[in-house]
Amino acid sequence: MTKDNKPTNGRRYTITLFFNPDPLAAVFYYRYTDLFGNRYNDLFMDDTGRIYEMASVQKWEK
Image (cartoon, rainbow, N blue to C red; front, side, top):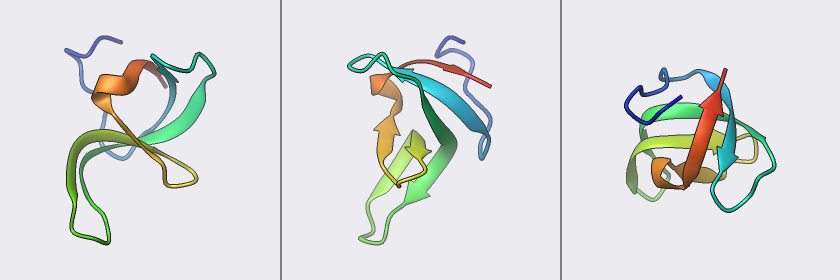
């Protein structure tokens, strides 16, 4: 997929990062606010809660 076609909110994807070629399972969130009140737009979150912003994601697949 290209970044022109945004992924679907709340759906799980396999993502590849620019800095790590190993695939990761993550869920896409259009908007997210953490416990400290920090707000994020267009991010992926893996099962451990680690956040990956769109700028670090090379590609995503269903």
